Length: 323
Ligand SMILES: Nc1ncnc2c1ncn2[C@@H]1O[C@H](COP(=O)(O)OP(=O)(O)OP(=O)(O)O)[C@@H](O)[C@H]1O
Ligand SMILES: [Mg+2]
Image (tube, rainbow, N blue to C red; front, side):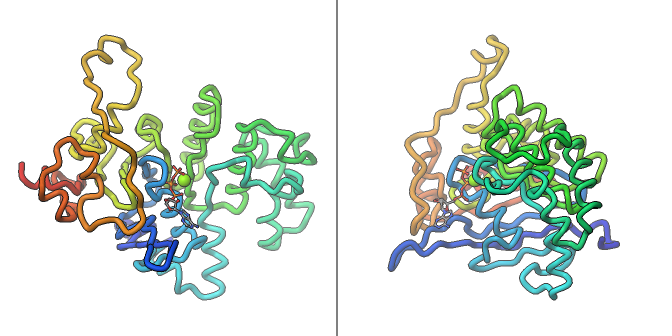
């Protein structure tokens, strides 16, 4: 690990990921995104479906090559690693995938799925089997599950298998891509608590991707809000929830159901107009303008830049500039 504690573990620098979807059509899934993640912290990445969260995660683990920009891990550009460094990177950075149904190979047993990485890194079979058993116990499963196939498990159990697989190679950084969205509410809290405990025990760093600002509030130290490929607001969790600045973040927050009926009445729900626009060839203006109830001419003509409004609190909104 890098000796300089101040240096972020992960630096995302001006990353773009465009998909060519037609002769003159670029789908700008991630568009000039920058952020840092420090060792031991959990950063929440939030936004509606299709805003580019998984694509961002995939660029950070080299499943996608960014169109431009850089991802720096532990001080090194991840596209410029030597063979040995690449091997280490594959071990240190893991991803828990969004869909626990599709992300596990249905023809492999749990023992093979969880043990695959161990064997790839040269662990003898017997030792690997023992480690798999330990890992299954860590995530609340047991050795009787080792010879079974993914279809024999519930969604929550499958996600636990995915987590055991990610943990098997002793990673430092895990990208958790909506690890609980596909699960029943009753199981969600269990998986979240487990991830938190694992973090404390193992000093893990997380990027936690979610639609839902309520889940992220509980688990994150800092939150990044994305809208249509761009970052619109980022701050420490407390600050983001108590001093929300971007109209889109405000709308996302007001969509969280309030358990207390008196409070629910008092919180006027902010509605977002219309559907999410297409990310194909977007106009060079505020991506949220056409759905924002406060938008002015400037918002339709000029792209707002992220600006620091309070220490560590960045927002990209012309309205905030004018305040
Ligand atoms: N391989 C691909 N080819 C073309 N377009 C893609 C590809 N992968 C993603 N996209 C598009 O990029 C945009 C961002 O997708 P992404 O999966 O990153 O969103 P997301 O924020 O993770 O959404 P969700 O919350 O539904 O998982 C979407 O418009 C999607 O259709
Ligand atoms: Mg996704």
